[in-house]
Amino acid sequence: AQSVSQHNHHVILSEAASLELGCNYSYGGTVNLFWYVQYPGQHLQLLLKYFSGDPLVKGIKGFEAEFIKSKFSFNLRKPSVQWSDTAEYFCAVRGSGTYKYIFGTGTRLKVLA
Amino acid sequence: AAGVIQSPRHLIKEKRETATLKCYPIPRHDTVYWYQQGPGQDPQFLISFYEKMQSDKGSIPDRFSAQQFSDYHSELNMSSLELGDSALYFCASSLAPDGYEQYFGPGTRLTVT
Image (cartoon, rainbow over all chains, first blue to last red; front, side, top):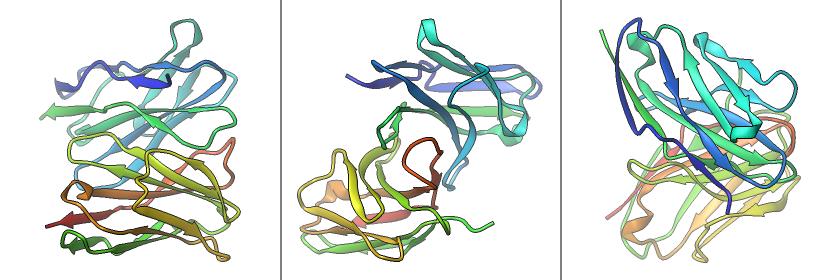
């Protein structure tokens, strides 16, 4: 069955701390991978995406993610978080040739000023 | 830049009533997706349309139906509403179904009382 696992449901960090959010997926085929952020009361916004090529992708607001095919992982990282990064982060997978996203359960990040 | 537009933004209905949610994709986008996000949950894919034809179907109840019109806007029709239908309903659009990321609208918050 296709699924996405986000291991950290709640993360609390102080400003300037480094961030890594885990994402593992289960899918038998080529995938496209995404990270979306949802600020309180707002809609999902694309942070970054991986379709092919360099497995290290850089997104907006200083975020990056690395696709490790052998580990079926697409972890999100940021070297130094800010208070404004407080939000919920969703990892999503789409199988090549399909239309729908499968979302992980999300990680709520709280950054303390 | 133009974004995905959803209307209404908030909707309150009673049990057994019907509701119609509307989605206007980003100009030139021909693919529309509907997702349901329950409180504290990840978005669940409902249905998608490409060039006015249903392209994929997820966990959409039989009480719900949707279509995409000639101008590419889409409507989600929900009948015999139940309390459990209370959720945030997101619409997303993309330039094409494959190879492009989805852009999400602000959502319609449906409350069934």
